[in-house]
Length: 198
Image 1 (cartoon, rainbow, N blue to C red):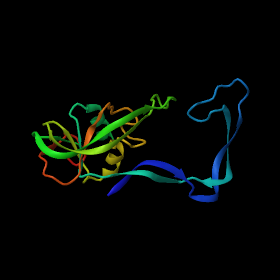
Image 2: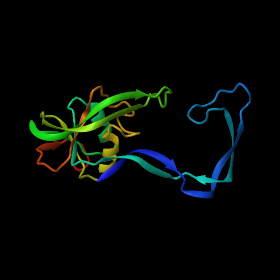
Image 3: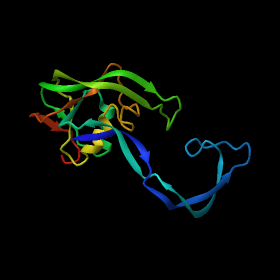
Image 4: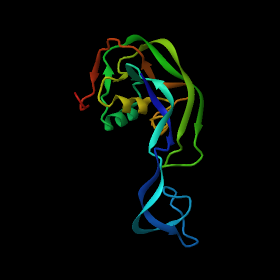
């Protein structure tokens, strides 16, 4: 199965009545709030209906194959904490395991010039390549047979436009620290204590 990793907003319905808070331009000299608008505005608190196009569809413009599981390097504890905060089940590999994986070879790393939510968002370009590897004991395993598999997929894909690489939780220079295990294989792994479904 394929899942979306990069999206664009498209119109859903035309001439939709949407409630909007009436606002006007702020007096000259008032600083703009960069999280809200490029120009300073004053909110009046009055809610009025406005007819507009409803851009309510997030359409995938790039997809990637969803694997059996992801393998995440043992040192990526911050990323694992983030995944578990989202309610995603994470395991650790009990013993070193030779296995066929796909690794993301990075061709370019671009950082946004503008800061957003205290981050300069990162965009990776590259490609998945097949490689025979031995995953060491302690490697984090995130299986896709769990309720939040699609969320885990979106967070771990290197090309995701809102994932852990985008938000600099995961970093990479040549090879991304996450690998795909494409097909079902037996894995001896232990669920991290306190994970959902433990």
